[in-house]
Image (cartoon, rainbow, N blue to C red; front, side, top):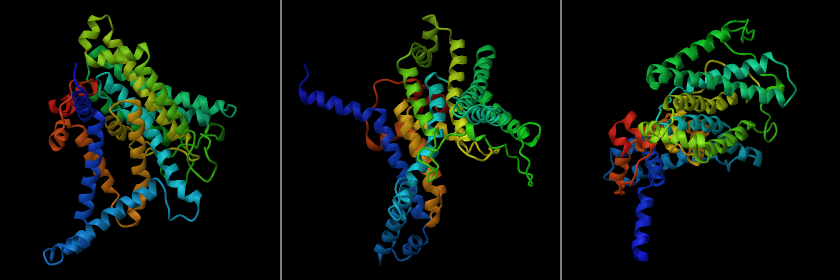
Length: 407
């Protein structure tokens, strides 16, 4: 029997080798990279370098100031603004983080589900747009009682996205076409189809003086109600996203369907030998993946009193890939990752106000993805032990980023 010290050392080794440790370290490194870009673009810091050896405190002080001010503004713009006039305004940044994070969470769940089945769904944008189309049509062209109208419009958005995802799965299963190519092309088709619909007055176009296409606003009965009154923009989209997290967890961790999906993700050949219809599973997986993205589409269409535009997808479909990777395709991980990226979106304007380029947050996000996608790099930097096993997400990393991503 091993000694307590040996068991303790083994536990520490397993923690350090785990995905959670690498994820936390990747986020920290991402913020460090962002700090370096803020410092490198600061005028006072660059001027101090010309006489660094005589007065190094000038450059070091400028570096500390720009980083503390930049990330301080991010905190005030996304979590809590202690400089606000009252408590309502002080807590508004947190509600904006939750509001902007809600669609990222829902879409991230969809992309994460595909990852766990060994598929790479980068068609979140097109699926989200189809969700917006279906939700908008129900919300503007059908009259129903309050609450019922909202639920039907939400279901319509889920169904619209689900149909597009199922099409990808069907084409992959029947023709062997790669899901990456299919989803890329369908993204373009969905974007231009959406613009076409809103430019045709007989369909969704609201009569406007300008030439910018815009859909009719959703009926009041179909809009997501505000959670905390008119003082905040946060609405029931957050509730539906959290419900989606619970459904995703149950589906993937506790249901028979989830077991089959995960089995195909681990080893399609073994799953086929065990009697699972792999092609049918691909169709189901893409449909379910898109269904979660459809929740985000309904959020964009029904979470506002104004009509959607061709840019209402807000890049959520692509951001969801990052959210799924950062969250390790697990329900709790995607929830936290979605909130983190929601905080980035909410805090970017506050950083811009103090003169820090909001693009720095894009660099932070990109750096986080880089480190997440390269576990060997993180292990080399921090001297972490190698994990004992790999999973379906590791296989996806190997397919997308090369063999090093799967180690």
